[in-house]
Image 1 (tube, rainbow, N blue to C red):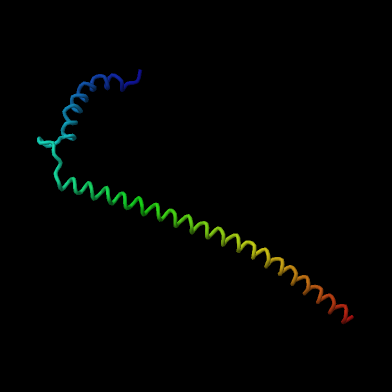
Image 2 (image 1 turned 45 degrees about the vertical axis):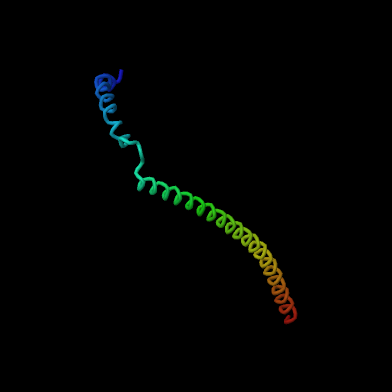
Length: 108
């Protein structure tokens, strides 16, 4: 049996008593039960701000998605152009080597 279980059994009644007296302090409402108008206005402003922020994040996410798609398309186009340039380089190198061979043969 772990050593902390007897300590827990002894302290549990005190903990429940502390919690039962502390919880009402955290959930205290005014006697009339009405909410302060300033607090209500602040809550409404916070909800409006949260809604606006959520809409802004949604718009930003859509724009980011479009940007990423544009970058992907550009990367694909550049990849195709790079392959084309490599083929042109190989062709130019072949022609240059052939020209050197023809020049060397003509000098002999």
